[in-house]
Length: 324
Image 1 (cartoon, rainbow, N blue to C red):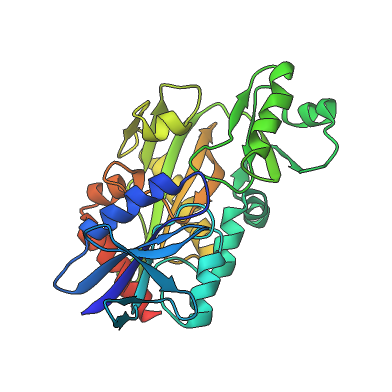
Image 2 (cartoon, rainbow, N blue to C red):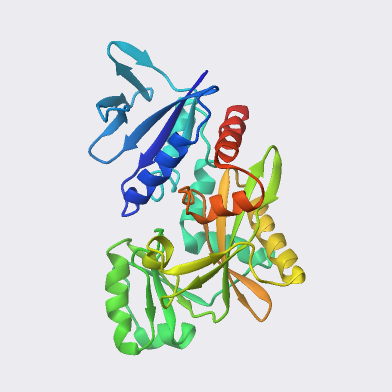
């Protein structure tokens, strides 16, 4: 029986979603093979939370926990932290130093994909299309005319290193532009401003399943709101249609691009990439490497469509981690 630490929580606005994802993993792990432990990672505390919600501090020196006088070490970590420090490479580097296998990709890949600007810059030479974009760091001069001359209106203002649509604004008028920048800076000290792509939005899960890089069935996203924002993602303000209502030719094209991105970036574990289809061409927006794992989340929906249950999906991630 392997001891599996399921890390959840994190330091970002996404911590509540992460706790939900982590509990879904906890509830769907095969108890005949694994002993799962819920580990809450917060800035103020790292704790093991037992079935009675009692908390036991994690020893950060070796990522162990002592419960009633017995020290517990973990054979493998299942990473369910959205945002920092689970999705940006910090936890990955920590576990690599401790030589503890984990379900997510390597620390460099995590850091790269978490930074939208850097990831898209790496993929562009491989022919992967993206929106027109402009970047700002906190403290940079904001030349509104210059920025809008490049990206046009409407446009999107986003934190560069954030998820779950926190801090994202769709800007339709010049007057909305500076407030949108202020909103994005609440989440991150780097901003990406992108031209509006008018087309169908799709989400594509790519995973290593039983040793083979596998593209899961594509999901079409139809948001009731102006874009796929937090409400649309988590509060039922969208339709997520799996498989997407697209032609076989376009399906193959999107699958090829999504798999190519996974391979170019030398990814491991889970990934879910977002694309907008414009003139029959997929344009990449971002890649999530710790996607939502709730029963309603997109990647579990796609796995279900592919005939992969949640216990199978999670066991696969654990077994691949143990083989690293």
